[in-house]
Image (cartoon, rainbow, N blue to C red; front, top):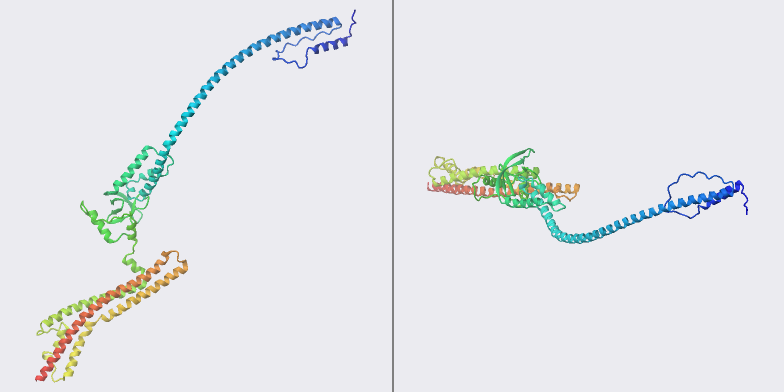
Length: 474
């Protein structure tokens, strides 16, 4: 049967259908072949034979392309198999290495646990020692700051402070130095020595002087006690020194030969000496009494001077009267008894006078001597009575000042009231301090004067009796 020839449009359509059949949807390849050179456009078939030839040619070419593609796929499969084998070998090596590392990790973990347990056990002992070290260093730091030996060994403060504030175990060198400083503090505390040390004077100028250290307790230099402030690098001269007895003991101690000698020792390292230094002296207490205290002292001084003068006078007069009593045949006018006797013996004896007149004249002679013998006693009695009264005035003034301070600032601070209380108490003490001695002195003066007056009365009475006897005999 003879086929009918296709027209040109139909032939093109059939070729397109045949070409499209070679690209079936869903068909995938493992590897896309390299881009082949673009095929020359197929000639357009003009009839079925040409179309058949074209189809046969395209089939052959497709078969060749598929064979080439299959060859490439096979080569790629072998290559992938080699790569897979290599990867599996690497995996096996890595698995072996991982197993070895796991085993090493487990062993290391056990060793770390063992070391941690050992470290914790040792850290417990070290922790206790570290706590004790910090506590001991803190206590010793306070002790060294208050010790006078720090001026001689100033470099130890930094070390001890570092140990007291450290947060980790210090090196062995610091521990050994700490032990050494503790031992040195104990050793030097038992020594008495002289060193050259800086001293700050009252004018603030620092000079180097030779000072005597009595352990860590007392510092003495140039006849004066020195003080040490906490943490200072030099000694200082206090504003007020301890009592003179303390300074005298210190001077004798410094100048003494080696041996056992007395010395002032302050176990509180300056606190007690400082309190002694702050105690007011007699002059300070007098100043506390104010103007009332000054007035009391003036009265007391005047009374004391007059009392001493009268005491000396009565002592001399008593001695002369006693000498006159021992030898009445030789009368002298340098004593009251001699003057009384001379007035009525010898040429001075009155003639023709009545006994009453003679008695009055003798009494007059005795009374003429009394003012000199009994003087000052009235003033002393006045001073004895006025002293406590003036002290009472000072007490009242001081209490008024105290109440005024309490009104202004309250009673919270006793120091603010100290001035008024001091005025009150010191005035009373001053008043009593002049009244009591003057009372005893006045009593002694009265006793001496009464003895002299008694001798004058006895001798004048005897003189009167002698005169009256002569008149009766005449």
